[in-house]
Image 1 (cartoon, one colour):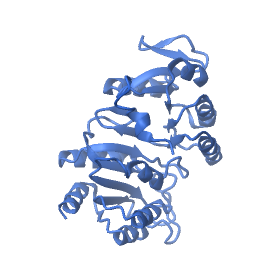
Image 2 (tube, one colour):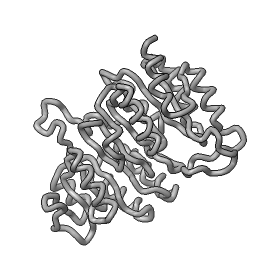
Image 3 (cartoon, one colour):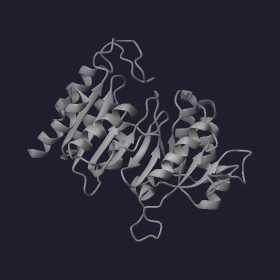
Image 4 (cartoon, one colour):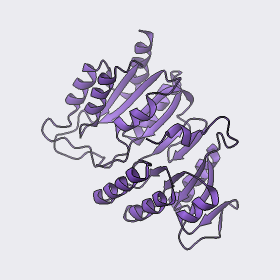
Length: 303
């Protein structure tokens, strides 16, 4: 698997350390331009934009715009891209990026057709690349690099990894952690579509070996079995870092979609009870409300 920290942070001995280049696909659209500006203001090194037909122009007077990802990658050697295009154009944009050599693709659009997501994931697998999303708020190492649509205020550099299916809860729980003195080493928004390029278990694999990791927060939701799979993986590996969880949608009626496309419970499959039970089995306490997460984490870290 591609080393996500090498992509995001680089080698401390390299001249471009802490300045990893990011290409923004759809940079001239209203949504893409807004968040490209915000990423740049945060310190993210946006090195190029791609909008077919607008090659040769400049974004914010400094960032070159290319017609294709191949031109952008050839011109910048970037390995990271973020996609801001309507869902119906996602597959074409993803193929353009992956075939050009992008190794980390952050997919913002929601309601991408499942077949398109599956096709993009197969190509990413062939190319040895990572897709975060679709329907993700993005990924960030606080105070270093932000690739996504999350506000910067809730996050602070630290040593707790946060993996979340929900964007809003990622912000809320990170804010609670920050206010309690727990900064974050990395935060990853898994995405709310039924099929995701990076599942909870995949994100765990990316962060579990961080050298100075002190704790892990898992923000799940009803629907599917990704939380149960992750809990089993944590047990199988004997992962010992303090870990706590929160499950959204406990009060949701069964067999009715609530918010995210993947958040639907059929019978007992995907229920909050199933997830809480599995986390408890893995010795992972589950908060009843977001504000309780740092309290439980502090308790785990004192043991």
